Image 1 (cartoon, rainbow over the protein chains, first blue to last red):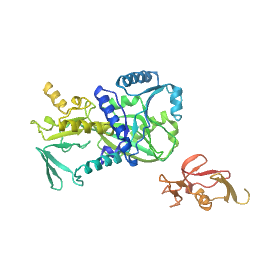
Image 2 (cartoon, rainbow over the protein chains, first blue to last red):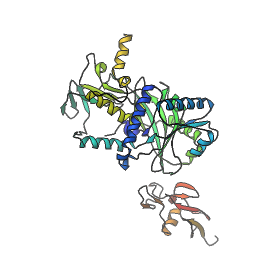
Image 3 (cartoon, helix red, strand yellow):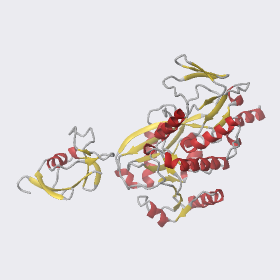
Length: 344
Length: 82
């Protein structure tokens, strides 16, 4: 359980606005997280620490104002910070930054514990949890495990993460990332801080990139990221990009250089070409003829934890024929099939 | 001091210790924990050779220093790492 990106990622619950569909799903999902807040066990380490998008210069402040307008029109609380307000909110940031945007309702969880909580709820509701043997085949209502076990169901929901060996035809690429966790320094950092340049890093579709992204944990530890690399399937840490990543972090928060790092690791995001996940019937994504038994919840890239509860509701709504709170259309996997048809 | 001892401040109290002692030894002799774990347990030096990180302490304002690898200095300010 939680052996892929769920264990490797930061667990930042964040509203992202780079497309209307992404804004709708992240906002919807974050609202569900906030409803769940009271039920989550302490091990999930939910913290409503908020996000500050940090602007280095006036050009990035233009983006801050644009983001704040988008937030206002969507009903997402957000507050533009002057340089003085930014320094007051996060005194360890370097001087000379242009300002920022505080999104107070964003938060942080510890993803493996959250996954464990959801799994426990499913088991209590009657689900049977099988582990220890990979699914090696899934088609026409039948799943076969590596140990020879065969399972049958009218509907099979596949959530393969970044490992698409079961369904090689999915439009998903692995995008490697690095994270470092520090020792405990309570009070060093209060909010999740992300540079606005992160948006450029996350969107640049091909080149390797790094961005300043630090997160306070309840223990006083901090997670320092981030990096993005396509076409690097080696799980080993990459010294060159780690150095770039940490230099980027030091450029924003020089005091980080005095802290002890405990552990550095990598993970693989499951990236789709349009930055949106695949939620719904697999249709013809898995072959020439649609297989009505196969359903997908995949391709969440860096937003799998944020979007998990919203994606689960969208999936349940489709399976049960219910109307969803947000438009499920932009996430339907067949959008990639339709594109191919146009160009063939 | 000229008598082969130094004075350090351990959690606010002045303590005289032998010159050349490690901070971990000074804390042990004074009955002070090196750190408090994330679940609130008191911890002190275990391996004594800089490997296990159990002896982390706040030394002269710097957090998480391995006290078994630091020799006391006159006037040093040492606190249990919390």
